[in-house]
Image (cartoon, helix red, strand yellow):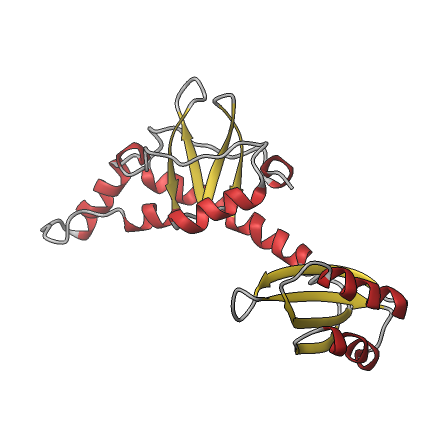
Length: 217
């Protein structure tokens, strides 16, 4: 899966001369939490988040009155508070690379550039939607999480056992185990019972961590 397949597009942008209060009002109307900022040629020059806008205020040491503060806020533009060193990604980048960058840099979104042109934005909300799909969160079935030896052929054994039961795998994911010698597998299966799946998987795994019936969202 690539960034271009899941990014939000077209992306809503603002210009650097947009007043702070206007940007915040537009953000709330559009129900987004950040705006890429472009110049008159459409070139990306910054990004501003809702948090940036809410935190923008005169110094705590100021002696301004409430009316003076409001006047000050009405004159401040996003250019004065935007992040100029923007971290970006590209449409052909793997989605997991974008997610890793966002997690490592502790940011909630990456503008997407194609040959220098802003074509979209990938956000934490887009990643959450992918997460739901990967786990089949909106489908009913038997959800099983098991600990297995990290060795060749183990996943084939698990999927073969489910096939022999007549089960259909809705989702299937692998994760780190208790130590380097093990891995955790979490799956959702339909057309089987909890009892039958438990019995089929138990001889093939180190431990059944959790197994349960889940309903569709």
